[in-house]
Length: 138
Image 1 (cartoon, rainbow, N blue to C red):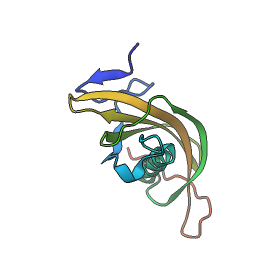
Image 2: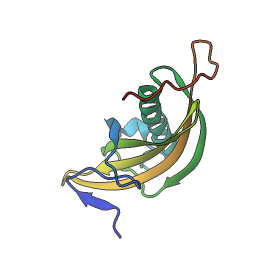
Image 3: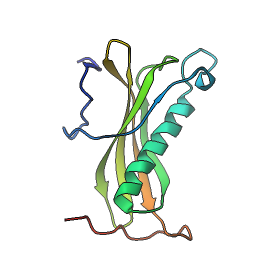
């Protein structure tokens, strides 16, 4: 099975198409000593994307409390269009489990999955204390 798809955005393991939370271009300043994009930069983009998804659900402040898994599948070349797709896959009273996939797009409009991870966020109040998630909108 190939990790490359043409033109249409990827789907998550649940089968649902999820949100693009961040889309940017990988720049030379973000490269490592081998000339590919530094893994830490990818993780920071994933954390920002996950936080955007979590904030929408929590309707307010959130914080990252864990990265339960992280897999780097392919290097990311400088100049790649990098898209972070997020999907809320579970929640507790205060926490949210967000699956994040990072895909790159080349000039031929082909997408390749390069990284995926499972991030846990918690809703917090103005003092940084845990708070309950608001009810889902009906």
